[in-house]
Image 1 (cartoon, rainbow, N blue to C red):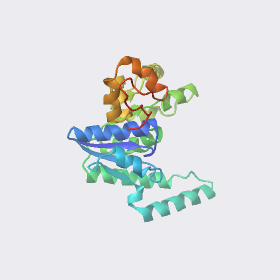
Image 2 (image 1 turned 60 degrees about the horizontal axis):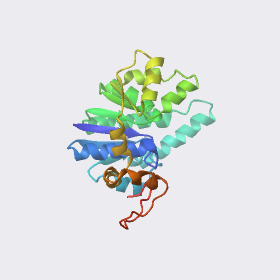
Image 3 (image 1 turned 90 degrees about the vertical axis):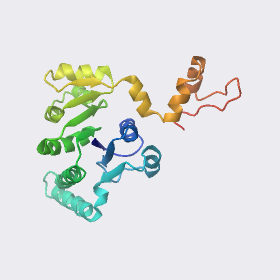
Image 4 (image 1 turned 120 degrees about the vertical axis):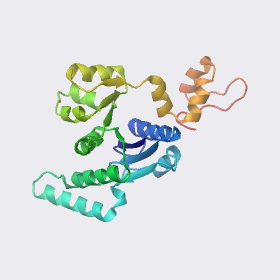
Length: 231
């Protein structure tokens, strides 16, 4: 299956790391995976090199630097004229559509509200299935009294929530939403933490867990201390 994973940026962050680890795991399972970075300038190249295998192609507006330059200029001009600055997003949606067709994508997985907003009209026009992952942003919008994002969620074929709390909030606010499921904690652990760390954590005695979270202690056998979020 050809899968495109869309995210807001490729920097350090919960949703971003989960999206990159998801891409790596899907590629390992034999799928053809692409990552679309909505903010081309927000990229940690060292992190990408560490988390994404070379077989996963990263796409963004940086692929077309001249087009990106003029898109930003026209965006700024729209703002100066008092108009909505939408030209860059329009160009980005056009490039996203081009990528979906060029690489014959079967399904799109989106991991940020801004990404959802950009992807939804494109995949709807092309007739592709969209899976939206709710990382807590829509729940925050609900707490702020917002409901304007409903049309975006209605485009999705499936909605995944990172917690049961987020899932319940969405289902209560919008009973007619597409099927909404919670990501299991086992899956989240696997995708959020480096693989070597997960393996070591799972096979360590339980009495070492609390020591690990306090910053790391040497084991009785003289092992090296754990370092949080390190490999």
